[in-house]
Length: 198
Length: 198
DNA sequence: TTAGAAAATGCACATCGTGTTGATAATTAA
DNA sequence: TTAATTATCAACACGATGTGCATTTTCTAA
Image (cartoon, rainbow over all chains, first blue to last red; front, side, top):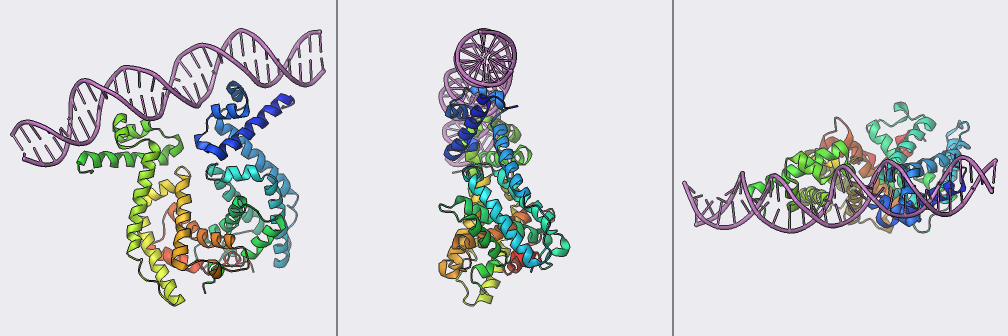
């Protein structure tokens, strides 16, 4: 499949048009007519490749996330034993992750923006949560008992995601190694410490 | 304005229909025809009260947020001087806030859900951020210098919001006083502490 | 209680985006 | 060059939209 050059070119143009239109008028407000017009592709041709605008969006997302998984697979080795080793390993993983995010920055930014796809963010949060479960063996025994487990888990995972959201939206984003260091530092800082409120 | 009983009844039914339909098919997929049919109101009548479904949504949101502000106004007194006093004051404020959120739980939950309005959540995060700025005089001098200020600020504010999100979606939610205690406790816990990862 | 005001109804209309179809033209791979 | 693939174009029915207007129902105030 996708042997023909025309196929590849058409789908690339449709994807580019989608990203452009998400940034200008937002996904909710754009139509298939908009996409095909912006891409310079006949509207009938759009329906040869995709069912509707949601189908196109889904395939763009699946594609970019599949590539992310390929990148991460390289670091899916065995987990270190000591905590300092694990922290160093995590920092390398963050660096690798953000290197890929930087490469696909425009697409991630559009999808994650307010005009983009809310479920993309939702899925991202879920992915981070699952990653934590599998990697750090996060279960009740590993969680604090000072607050209920569901709140603890949400705070642990979402704080990671919050940093991504700031990074993807800022003008001059930090380099992958910088942001990896920031993340690792933030893991030891409580909100009251961040605010010098003690 | 709105003296007539019919006005109030109609707008109430339209609002109820909106919440119902958000929960069933999601805001993006519901139509004005759906709303008026569910409400048992003529479609033409809908347009007498609202411009479109977005207008109805906006007015429901503005109304519920205005009422929240009324509730919070009562606690807008002077800020205590010592940090322990400020923490106790904050806990009372959280308790008051969640008492109102509990009262309007169904509406908040629908709007905040994945099928609801993403911008409602976005505005909520902004509101929390602004509240922090004005109340805790959050400026660069008050923030840690261990990580960049924009990340610190996001982590401080969003962790509050994350707790709200868990609370609004769980089956047997904690009482206002309980959740206020949980929040206050969480302010002193870093992610690595929450995960017993030290 | 009743007259007049206000609100809701029912229907028609033009508009727009949708998804599909079938005929035609252009491009590719062999 | 040829056969297959792909893109184009025009046309179609459908459904939701927003508006207008005449009619009916309901409420309010005197």
